[in-house]
Image (cartoon, rainbow, N blue to C red; front, side, top):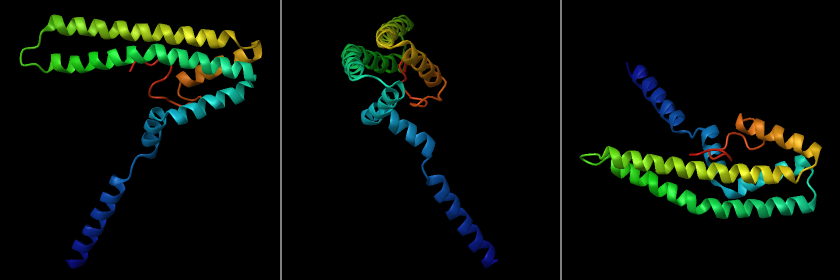
Length: 161
């Protein structure tokens, strides 16, 4: 009887230890997506694979910075709209008209972000040689499928999250 209780206690403690371990795949992806330095390392992977000239690297850097400056206020507005949506939907008497207006506002902000991102993508693509363009297109296809150098980013270039 004591042996069974001891074995049960050991088994439960091992189970607890295993369950408490972080999921490395999920943890790595969430940290990777939120860490700007890691995203920059991934962008350098593209630079190396595309064999960019110094002028192209600088142009990409400037274009990325300009795009981020454009997106930041929109992302802020989207975050505010999401927070407002929680307020609207958790009210004691939800106002469906206000909820629907807010949903439309969020959709409009997401559309605006997507347009800016696609414009940036096409501007970057236009600066490449034919060979670089083929590689760039392949990377973009792989990235959307979660297999590219950046893996499955939680906020890919075209993600609306």
